[in-house]
Length: 309
Ligand SMILES: NC(=O)c1ccc[n+]([C@@H]2O[C@H](COP(=O)([O-])OP(=O)(O)OC[C@H]3O[C@@H](n4cnc5c(N)ncnc54)[C@H](O)[C@@H]3O)[C@@H](O)[C@H]2O)c1
Image 1 (spheres, protein in one colour):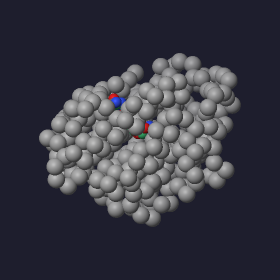
Image 2: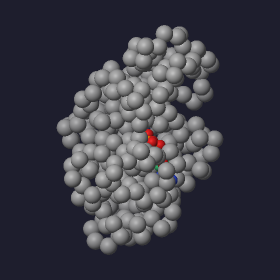
Image 3: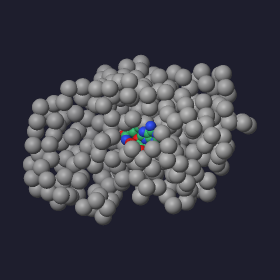
Image 4: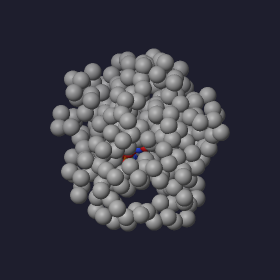
């Protein structure tokens, strides 16, 4: 199949591109390289270096005529979104609509659209954990709100323009090539600091919990979503929360790091506990996580050791 991956040179996008290439698909990555890296991208994929908000994207998509578009390009910083909501919206709302309009204006049957949304920033601080998709969406940041906006647009684009879609709400994704600035940046930040024998800082008491899902499992879920008739949204997580202190302990052991963490004041806006119930995607697509946290962390640390230290 002819497949476009926006954000294909980024962390999650590049793992997805690897799988698509391995499966024999023709892949075009569209990425402005703001955080993406050429080194991440499979040599078998083509790169179009372009901002998703650029109007010329219409020509790129029309020329390529994709069967499938995975949309992973985004402004991913929650804190930047809180400082500059309009900057976030220009990429995450207007940029995404620009991609959808490029699909709708391409001759022939419109490509299927797989949207990479967030679970970690979608439910606020729910009382029910792990959080199912039936909980109300209560984004706590402009980033979560912009992702939610696109979830609301997608059924409209499907009704009006026939663009089929599936939305995945990802938990905190970690793994090799991870950018330290993303939602689950803590694994990359801790690993890098520990391997360089630098001080590690923990905000608050370290009891905040997140649902860490391995990037290889996420790439598999995205491929399954491409072949699914379900619109979602579908949570993609492990259903288990891990606190920062336990994560610190596991990474310290893997890195051979012996220094205690430095505890600072909590960051405003950080949520306490979140984990996602992924029963719906298991039921509809047969997806479930396969990588145990300790194994995924070991692969991640090995990658940082080989590539960045
Ligand atoms: N990492 C996580 O834990 C997590 C969790 C939930 C959702 N997500 C979503 O997954 C997707 C991928 O995130 P990631 O963690 O791989 O981050 P990433 O920064 O590694 O990937 C984003 C990619 O998009 C590119 N990009 C950014 N703005 C662009 C623009 N305007 N035009 C074209 N390309 C642009 C970047 O250069 C980068 O290659 C994002 O949509 C993010 O919101 C990530």
